[in-house]
Amino acid sequence: MEAEMGLLWEVSAVEFVFVTVVLGGGGAYAIGRSTALGWSGWGLMAFYVFLLTLAVRFIHFSLFDGTFFLPFETLWTAVYYALIDYVVLFAIAALGRTFVRNRQMARQYGFLNAS
Image (cartoon, rainbow, N blue to C red; front, side):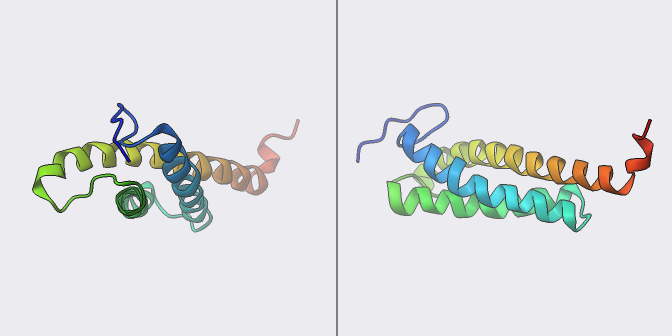
């Protein structure tokens, strides 16, 4: 498989959407939801998303010929695409967290919105 190396994806757009957005995004949404339900802070969510980013990078590496962190020649390429994956996954996790937190607040403090 020949690398197409874009700004957002390393191998292909389809691979990026499938692995990062669909698979990783589902996990990121669950992370955001669980940190909101447990009333945990943003720092814990950021750490969990970091661990998920490592897993997503490994899937890119093992299944689609992407780069990983260990060979020094590909380290900075892997860090670049890991940062992109992290930003996308963090945004999805923040969406899940905000959605669940808004529901919690509306349920807990619904009397504030009563007219």
